[in-house]
Structure formats: C-alpha cells, structure tokens
Image (cartoon, rainbow, N blue to C red; front, top):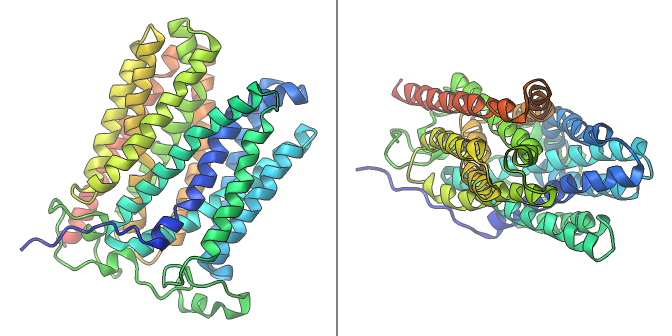
Length: 430
C-alpha cells in the first residue's frame, strides 16, 4: 500500500515563519530599482552605484559562516530576531547615508542581516513542516516575491508624489520590526525553541545545529517510501546514517544555477528589451516586473505540486520552462512579446531556488544549518559573478548575444537536477 501523501499544515508557526520572507522580498525589489535614483542624488557613476550589488554579495559571504554560529549561540528564534533587527540597521544606513562610503557598508550590514534571517528561517521551516518542507519553503518564497512585487510600485508612487525613493524603501524597516516581533512571539516548538541566553545553550552541546531535539527532516519519513510514489522531498532521502553527499553537492550546484539565472536576468533584461524592441526606458524597465510576477505565481502552484511529484523532476522541468521563456524573450522584437517571454521565464525561475534549496536540505539530514550556510556562500558568489559575466559578454559581443549564457546555465541546472534525483534514488535502493 503506497504511503499517504504528505500535507502542508499552515499552522500559526508555519505562517509566522513566512514573515521574514516578506521583509527580504520588499527590501530586494524596492531598493534595486532605487539604485539609479540614489546614484543621481550622490552624484556617482552607474558603475559606482552597481557596487551596491557587490556589497550585497559580500554580505552573503559573511553571512554564510555566521549563520550556523548564530543559531548555535542564540538559538534559532534568537538568530532570526537578531538578524532581522540587524537588517533594519543596514536599511537605515542606506536611507541616511550621505555618501557612497556610508551606503556601501550599510548594504553589507543589510545583506548580512537579511541572509542570516532567511537562512535560519528556511531551516526552521523545513524542520517544522517535515515531509511537506518542499511545499512550505516554496510557498514562503512565493509570499516574499509577491510582497516584493509591490515594492517597485510603492517606490514609484513615492517618487511621483515628490517624496523621493526613501519612503518606499523605508517600509522595509516597518515590516522588519513587525516580523521580529511576530517571530519572537510564535509558539515554542522543537524547530523553534524559545528565546534563551547564551549560557542556556545546552542544546548546542548535543551536536544539534539549532540546539533542538527535532530529528532531521529525513528521519521522520518511513523507510521504504520510493521516489515517484507521489511522495514529497524528504520521503526519498535515506536515514541520517547514510547521508547522500553526492546528491547534496549536485543540488548545491542547482542552487547556484538558480541564483545566477535570476540575478543575471533581472540585471540585464531591461537592456535586452531596449536594444531589441526599441521600447522606451520606462516600458523596458516595467517589463522586468513580468519576471517577478511569473515567479510569484509559479511558487504558489509548484509548492502543492511538489507533494505529488518528485521535487527533483519538477526542478528539472522548471529549468526547461526557463529556456522556453528565454527563447520568447530572445527573439522578441516588440515589448509585448518580450513581456510574455519574461513571464514564462518567471514561471521557471520561480521554482528554481525553493525546490533546489529544499532538495539540498533534505539531502543533508542532521546538517541543515551547515548545508544552508554552503548555499548562502555559493549564492553570494553567484550574485557577484553572474551579472558581471553577462555584462562583460554584452560589452564584448552585444547584449543579445550575451544572453545565450542563460540557456547554457539553465541546461546545466536541469542536468544536475536529474543527476541529483538519480543519486537520491540510488541511495534509497541501497
């Protein structure tokens, strides 16, 4: 008799852990379009303004080793709350900084806080939801990108009203304070212990990265659950005594491909639309919102779907959808077709990161925080390299030719997704 399909229960703790994703989504999608306005105010070049992206990558690199230490030292709840408040300090620096020498360090601080916040929350969400982790993480990212979609509109409305870009980005601080308060008051559970002093971190001495007694996601799944039975991600991972190192490494590569695709496209899609369709700057910039809209919509679809179809199969298919969207965008000669291509690409992109990170966490039983740390580090490198590489190719060969990099990365992501699924299947069979 096949095992019952897991079901995502959206209890108070699950929904409460969605809150940090709304903060990070608003921060990313409200500040990024504000960078040109910040450049005008500070009288700096576009290249100098682009260093804020580099500063964000540096923050991610710093957050990677810091996250597991913060969880061990402060507990998962304390790490999330502290990181969220650190994010507010960084955003305040961005809003108040009079020169580039102020805003760049402020971005590093904001990125450290944001990355630790999301990393610690993601592992806690996976531990709490167990076999439904792939659905929960995907839905949480969908909530974040959906809220983030409003960010550029808020910035635009503030600028139109004559208030400048700052009020729109300042909403991040309000959301962060609300999220920190909400997480601090969530019910105590094994996956989210109560706030504690460092001296009470007895759980850390047991070897649990969160100071929690909760078993790894894979440990709560009955043995004998086979891939393709409609089971969700953790149902196909062997017990902790056989950690599928090969699968984890492959899914980490999928995380890098996902982050590289999203950032390279959001940085340079506007330029592609400008050069290929003749659209005005305002229209070309607005088409990028189609990518975010497609991502948000897909995340609410693929989450429940991952409880019925093996997440590795969905991940491979999503890279294929991204290639279809790229083909429409790359061949477009009018803005409407380019917008359609970005929406379709968004359908693929929306599944990439949450599914790949879910697969990585489930392939690392008992080592969730360390695996998430590796993903944060790899993601920071991808953010720092991918947009630069595509830009360098654009300088050398033109933006249209440079965008051939997108399907190359997508094919690589699809291949490692398939190979990762096969690695998990082999370990289960063994």
